[in-house]
Image (cartoon, rainbow, N blue to C red; front, side, top):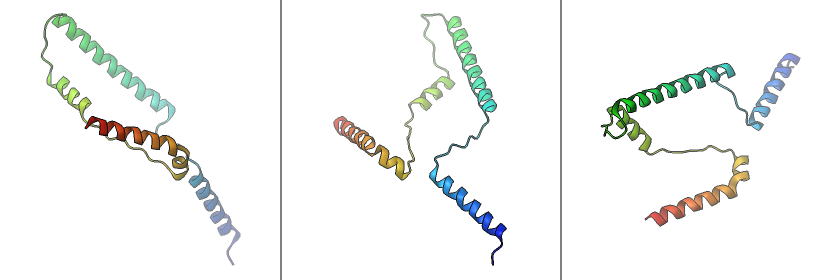
Length: 116
């Protein structure tokens, strides 16, 4: 016969697997304090960039034409590059949002046909 410990262990694993398959859980990769540090760093970077742009505009003057630097040109290229957007849904979510997705897809197809 199988020992009680083995049966109990298998039961715990089975229940955990069932719960994991039923829930749509979010497992955080970063802790709350790490996320705050990351946001603060991004905010500081944004402030530094705005200060650099402000100093540059003060040096040049309001009416002078300025040639964009290579870094600015690269940023423009990155911003205008096409982006692919994707979404993953399980069967329950698909059933729930089917009508809305169908409507959005129809609008997207109509807009591409009208553009041609």
